[in-house]
Length: 155
Image 1: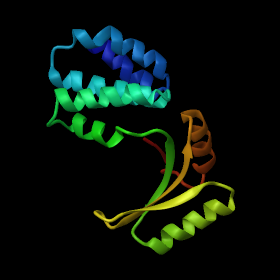
Image 2: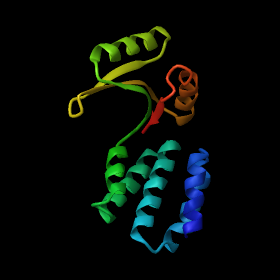
Image 3: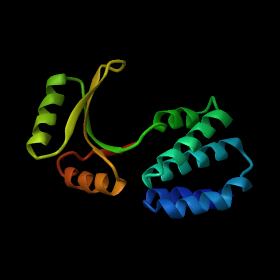
Image 4: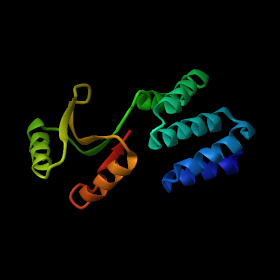
């Protein structure tokens, strides 16, 4: 089971999500530790999201929360649940003015940029999107990386 789930992780990071799901199916029932099962189910949900299988991902994220409620995996699953598209987060800023400057710069380049505020952490996020497919988001991220090297795709 651990070999299959290890392959799931490798395939996820290689962006081979469909193959990762196959490894999950082959290995999940063979796992013995709850921690391993929780991580495997969470990673499966991520693969499903990347494939645009939003409802399947939500079911798996809900299962992680139900079966392993007090774990880090359940917390992360909760953060991903309900997503229906992709965003590229280009940066986090302490100042709204800085975030607005970046947002306006991206808009001048023809990108659908928006600023989001996290009042709990007192920071601003600048994101580009939303995108309907992971491939489109990944292509846009590649375009942004020379200037925004920490750009990451969400969810």
